[in-house]
Image 1 (spheres, rainbow, N blue to C red):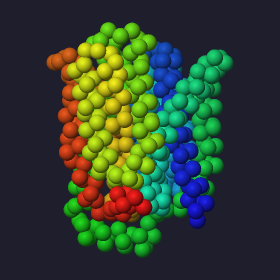
Image 2 (image 1 turned 90 degrees about the horizontal axis):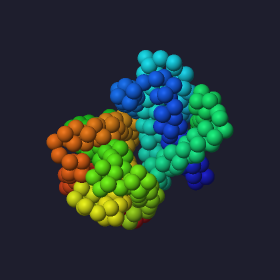
Image 3 (image 1 turned 45 degrees about the vertical axis):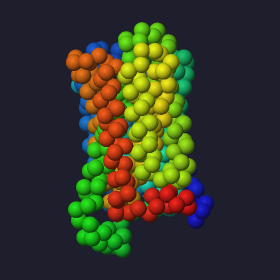
Image 4 (image 1 turned 180 degrees about the vertical axis):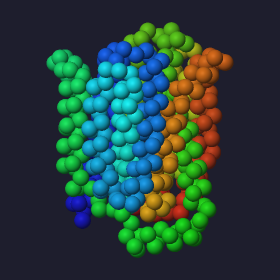
Length: 399
């Protein structure tokens, strides 16, 4: 049993790395795809909305399928779909076909994202201790792999279709070969279904409200993440006058501390509990982004981005974990709700900051993120009120 559980955990790491790699392969090829199809940045921006719409739809579909068919079925199927769809953006010669390709790729990405997170919840439940944050950290590893592979393929003179096609084939093989190690969790048996119905009958109103509060928090936190991704380097360049080479370190500092924090968050959550992670992580992020917003000097801004990334690093895994454990028979559906709203926040973050720059200076728009982090810190107690507190109680007791 211990061996199979360890194998399931390794397989879950593999799927998170796979997802990060597939998304990263698309991201690093965006300039080449844009040039090939001959579209403007504005048109590409509109197409990225379709990518997001596809992902959001995929999250909702996969969440329900994971509860009905089991994550052991849905995760590898989603991995195959996302891998196969990766090649599609490299094929179109016309803008409308690129739009369709991005819609399909987004759908596959959304399916894989939610189903692997739902399976991660099952693994965490079996381990009886927090393990979710480490999975999210390895998603970033996939991005690094994609950057290295993309650079190597470009140096070797590989075509766009060959690069993404090869990555897709490797992804399909990886998704299929890792499937056997996944936990044989849900579909809900008659017993599980009865337990779920009993839990729903016992708390018919509290659970849905609890999930939507978690989803709202995910939206706010991922809005902050999306804004940091797109505006950190530009802030250093336009507000503080840093050269491009220096400005890039703003995002690099934030991303590095985000990854480090996620690698450490599980162990920390075991010691202090998820409520403390959410409360003090949000508070740390609020302090960091306030320094960024108000400091006229570059080095304090670097420190602010570092604090911001470190503070945010463990928050989303806590919310996903809480949603999945709220009702084991509906883990996929609940994770899809939280992840779906969170993803909308990620997409909206850059646009919201961009709109606000018409009213105030870019650095002052970051105070919106301060306010959102303060709200998250103030409402951290929501993690105590879920219908299933087993994992969170173990985290706080240190077992």
